[in-house]
Length: 129
Image 1 (cartoon, rainbow, N blue to C red):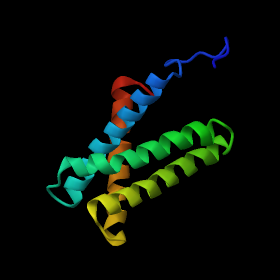
Image 2 (cartoon, rainbow, N blue to C red):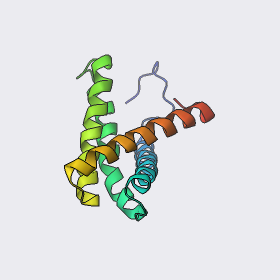
Image 3 (cartoon, rainbow, N blue to C red):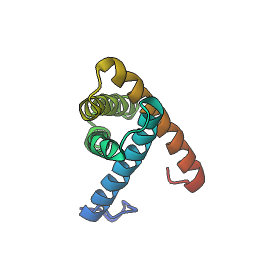
Image 4 (cartoon, one colour):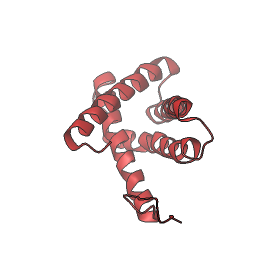
């Protein structure tokens, strides 16, 4: 599993993967609900929870096996992860909120903006990244 010279904060076990997925899902759900409330109006938070699992899984899978495994170069890998996550987010948002493509694109852009701002703020507060 882990070599003696490679430190890991989480140990890389199943629990670490599950907790990371749950936290990523929660983060995407909160930011999507904020964006949907701003764009659509009053919406149930359950819709955001349903849609948020898709970009969470896609982003975590691509980060782990796309960039880290060497499938993509690190500079290209970030672009691929962001674009694939946005496409997955668009598909999930369109199907869960039952929106047309014309309405999905601005909502996904808002979701990306809310996630970027909140991620930047949380990084400055907690210094996690």
